[in-house]
Image 1 (cartoon, rainbow, N blue to C red):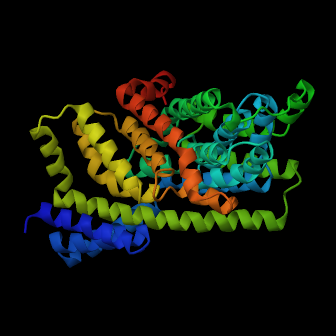
Image 2 (cartoon, one colour):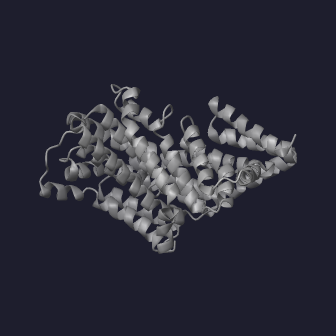
Image 3 (cartoon, rainbow, N blue to C red):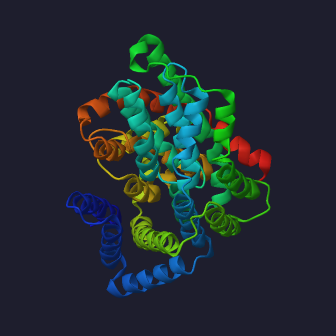
Length: 434
């Protein structure tokens, strides 16, 4: 049996394990270990597993992940989680569809703190959904805007998904963060345009909210100015070369401790809870990364990625056509696979192909995370929809997915724009020299 066939069988086995509900980290590691044992022998496979464990755990760059997670949890403890929506609602809530627009703005702001799609939709949704329903918004628009806006947390820095990709692809996390800023902001603009068009066609979807005096609007800014300064200092410091990503995360943690103290949230219970959640999440992600590294080694040893790359070259497909084919596969897989599982599964296969086609690994990381985000709202899995349904149990999943429809169109247009104009992604890292 050829190594390529063994690699393909390993890939199919991985799909079966994931379908059976085996955790992604264990599935990746198990398939990778067995595959390496078949290709190289049991002793070589076990040695490779030990080397991979040591390399991952001792990797200096990986320290950025638990530090940014701790910063996010400390900001949650400081009570800074729902203020973004409240401030945005004061400024634009009086416009038609204004509270839905504020939800997008709130998700973008909170995404810069949390770095997680599910955390963003759960936190902003619990604050924004009752307000929109109280104002008479159609449940479909209210739920759809929040589900879509929640995906911003996966792309806007500091993004956990980009950190994981940077480690897997051995790329600069700071450069990935810089490259994600413009796509993240433009994604929010595309969502806002979708809301504006919907409410222009059907004004009843998003009635106007009461106008708030400027004095009240400016007073609301005081609630988020500290957290905004923290994010700008951390991300801006990386882009200006003041800090490495790990140093920036360390500075962010210290600043978040100060934020907790200033807001009167520096208590033993809250701090202990923040550390506990950070350790739990970090341990899970470390296991996933170790499994992904073993699986990537197996795929590389099998020659499957090289074979597929040669196949793409042999059929003489243009780079854009090849990337569109990848996007289609990612969207199909994303409809039933978790976003992180999708990234870890496809990176070892698609990244070498993209590099052979002449694409930048930094651009590919943004493209991959952007396609992964669509999976958060794509039926039938659409994890963000299920999180929202848990917040508002009287809104059916059918209604939520109906509301997501226009935002899916905006997603596809935005993804197409990123594919058509790669320079849009790479411009900021080039200008800043990150």
